[in-house]
Image (cartoon, rainbow, N blue to C red; front, side, top):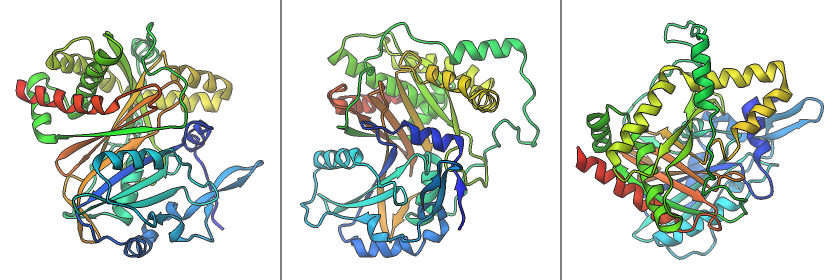
Length: 420
């Protein structure tokens, strides 16, 4: 029986889960059809599961050899794809409440760590709420699984080629960095905030979610024209603007908020469940001008990208794990401190073309990621079919009115596009 050891990243993610924090992420896929049935969906997914073997593995192992991914010999698709026995079509507000309720539930660790719930929506539509444990798949891997077993793409687009971590396209490792580069890396990535984040609080088990959407190409063009900035820069800028609007209504002004930005280190052909790193930066939110904010974000991300800070952080943590696990844990405690960063904002590339599920057109795909202890807000962005789809996850006891933040993101994006 094949037993696959969990990677360091997988084990770290499992360790984050506790009585108040779940370890899964979520994709909310809305289909323009009322007729998608549960048995049809089960049969369709079961017929394609061979293309994604990790989805039929569960946690196993022992204390001596550590956790392993092992085959789930009793795998039953009915335990992983379900629907409420009786439900009324959900309004947009009811859908958010139901997604938040499902998101707060735990996945059964005795089974493969994923589940899809089928929900009926108003307007003759259907939602698929797919929860998948982060230890099983990060954002890039989750989209790979989705295209393998669920989504039919309307073009044969191939994923962008990504160089292997720490290597250039030619296959050679990055040259060793000069001492001044290492000093700059430490100053950028280990800086802290002297002010307490508004999201720094003990989190409970309840969740609230909100969604937003922005047309991709106008925002991309505006970012390039106004600041020679990227879509990722624009995402950070408009989310910061949404936070500013929310803060003014609930907490008053704040000069900046420090953000953790995950960076995918997946390379072409890899099948890793988790392969990413991150860099951090302070995003200004005191300035009402969205163009000024975008330029400030661009000014902060350029040196981090040029110096490969995300790859350097990955190398540092791996080297510390090899040399001194105790020092590695100390470094990780620093990295997870709310004084190091206030929230995480991720951006995952999904299919640029249209997609369908069993012949029914997919209207939208929102992504959600779990919050963490003393980090009561998390923002996930997914690009799909010409739009950016935002998902906000919060503890409502700490972050009240997250739908205002989501609306603020759409308004900030509109201002940037208008400025261009």
